[in-house]
Image (cartoon, rainbow, N blue to C red; front, side):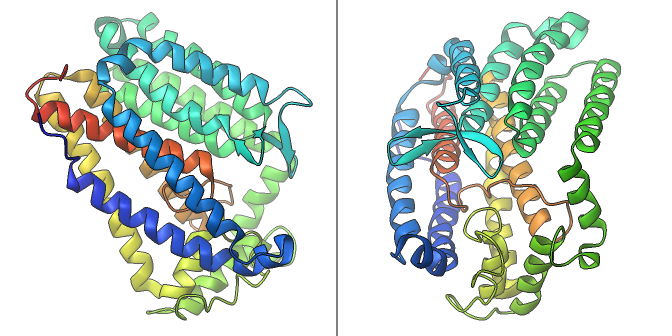
Length: 371
């Protein structure tokens, strides 16, 4: 049986990880020197994250997909437990008003990232087991909606609006691709959009972000500060950039540029050409994931197909939101750029998702889903 992972998946993902290491190193040097007296603090930690992500991906790749199909409910239960634990005072760690992290010694775990993968695996298995109900009956559609509501509620209590949007969006996308009735889908989708709108206007800081998005230059030193600094970074980059390491905006103009706004620094240092190159890698990777999903569908392997579609939705949703926020296309919202942004849990989960897709492709090449 072939054991070499599909290069169409591996090459663009590896390129994004390596570019992410370069971008994080460049964007974090001054910040790390000021706060940790070590210019390479974030770069070295990210190397540890890369090693952990590679190890987890290798384990996931070696596990048959049948295991994930039969244990999806258990992973979802674990994710919900972690989402509850992070909210308990004294257990969860609060940063900048949000309680999203579980401390594990010198590192932290972000349960919302685990929830994304757990929801994909659970929904994929559910839609295979309950295919007729999902496509033809209300209860088949509403049961996963109840689970999704529980996860959404826990995410919003943290609060983590960005993760909520990605989890809800990917779940709705998977259900739509599973063939739910259009009337059922549109009715519940309208309700979900209405609920998201209420969540936006219910918090003053979200309203402020939305107002700043419409005209960031109206208040460039307060609500519009991050966006204006990000736009300045894009403007400085012009066609070919200032050169790696030569960003001006990372010098404490753009707050914590190595996390949510790493794409802005990349665009400043490599220009429009570098930014389009990174976008091209995402297009290649997501396109290949969708191709594997289509191949799984043609091979009568619905679980594999649904997992691939869910992974593609998460990758594309996060990349679109992160890049859209950085360039002013979308309101400011903290969300990592897959494979590129600094963050251990995000990188590990992204690599685990990729390993699942690679395993699905391997099983299809081997001539059967149970390989």
